[in-house]
Image 1 (cartoon, rainbow, N blue to C red):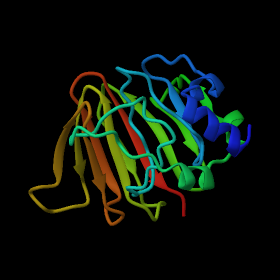
Image 2: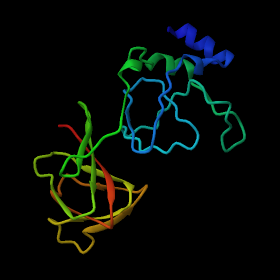
Image 3: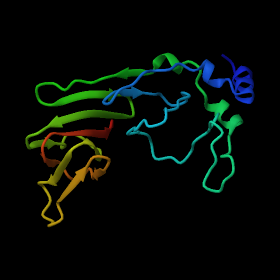
Image 4: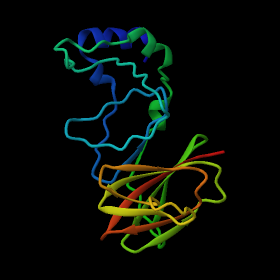
Amino acid sequence: MNASLIHAAIQDGSLARYMREYKVRAGDVAFIPAGTVHAMRKDTIVAEIQENSDITYRLYDYNRVGNDGKMRPLKLDKALEVLDMKTADNVIVSHPQTNEKGVANIVQCPYFTANLLETDKPVQRDYAPLDSFVAFMCVEGACEIKALDCDSPDNAVLIRQGEAVLIPASLNDIRLAPQGNCKLLEIYMEM
């Protein structure tokens, strides 16, 4: 597929015909490299890990309108500039299973590592070997996250499904205390 064919498909509303569809279920992971056209179906909830950027180039927007009642703008020229036609075959969809320690590595790439942590018991994590912040996103249940190497009275936070917390690189000894069964995404940068 080339840029002129994509542009024509956008104009005539047939772009979806050229896209690959993946059936997903709760707990699935999709690694979508930068430059890959992607969309989610209605009622799909995702935890998206990406660099801090407000740049989105829409190729097609299903004729949706913004809060102002107008069609949301498309940025076709910019989108076609960054579109990577080769990445479509690199999309990986999996349903990770945690090991006996309750950990599943779901993505490891040059930019970040993402693990799924599943536990119903307290767990201690040592981040001293990392030179990175650690982000936790709660995808199921609730968990208290406590910095054991911090003397502040505010060294613990409770996160629930849909919430996230950022642990600075200066904190290394973290205790996770789930409230019942809990699933967390653990994300850190590769240095």
